[in-house]
Amino acid sequence: MEKKEVVHLLRDLIRFPSISGEEKELADRLEFRIRKTGLLNVERFEDNLLLTLGAGTPFLLLNSHSDVVPPSDRHEGDPFDPVIKKGRVHGRGSTDAKGSVSSMVTALLGLAKKGYKPTGRVSLAITVCEERYAEKNGMNHLRKILPEPDAALVGEPTELHPCGAQKGLLIVTLETKGTSGHAARATGPNAIYEMSVLLEKLRNISFGKLNPLLGSVRITPTVIEGGSARNAHPESCIVYLDIRTIPDYSNDHIIKKLQTELGAHVSIFSDRFVATQTDPGHPIARAACEVTGHPLVGSETSSDWVALADIPTIKIGPGRSIDSHTAGESIALEQLELAVPVYQNIIRRYFEHTTELLEKGK
Image 1 (cartoon, rainbow, N blue to C red):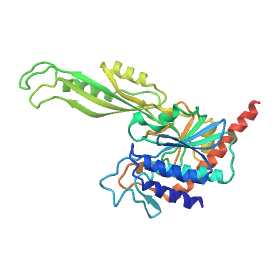
Image 2: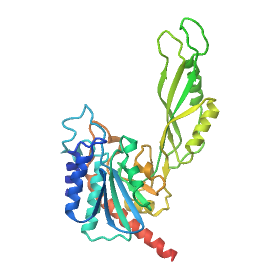
Image 3: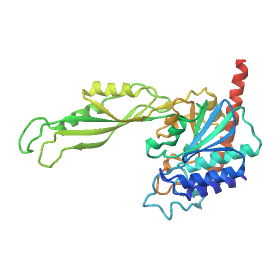
Image 4: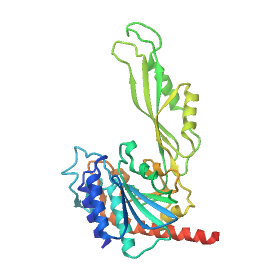
């Protein structure tokens, strides 16, 4: 029964074009649908939904997001009209992350139907603006309202492999200065040539530590801006650096190293997405590995785990990350259906482990 329910729910959710900032209709529909069951406590904070089973501590928080990125012009058919073919559900958001939302909702309702009573509280936060609009991010908003969770599961496509570490994203800029003047005359330093010197130095910068799940810090120049006219010396040249960070180095350490080795000023453009990692011995990590039979893996992509950086968290969900945001976005039915018992069993095992620890401590 749950297999049919999760597929039906996913297809229903895909029909709502819930692009970031436009999640209200989906939230209305989902709130009505879940309240009607009478199985879970339902709270609404703007267009963020919180579904709860149980009470007290420990508090396990599940989270995934209801918003999607805009559809591609290359979509075959209507991206918000879900189609099942060759064992996959096709449509915008099927993988990122309505597959996780549907599986988590179905899992929690299924536990409630079976009369499961956690030795604490488990809540599912279905939040807005994960893809865009950081100032309106739903998980950040709920962190100001909710009590602090003891552990969390973030629903994102990981092929149901438990992700125990996630790279951060630090965006900085380098700027060089030149002397203005006509390009036909030598008038002093050329900002673009000066930047080329810095970029050559940048090639040789390395960070010694390797994170066992994430590897090394990766620095990629992504955008260059310089000059104002084709016949004038550029006064300024700016390069943006996309830096994928690991928990082993703080953002401050990375910036200081760049400044020292480049001999240049480094300006922060964005440092919101910090690197995260969970102790593999924590009950939530143990539960996820035991249930899935897979070891912890690392993730290059970011998620709302950033808003839970201080909480032991595992990122796990159905679908392949490589399918996210693509014109042919889809999710395998097998993954979607398997995710329901996986989430249910992780929840059960987590509370079993926390109960064991509590009894040992008495």
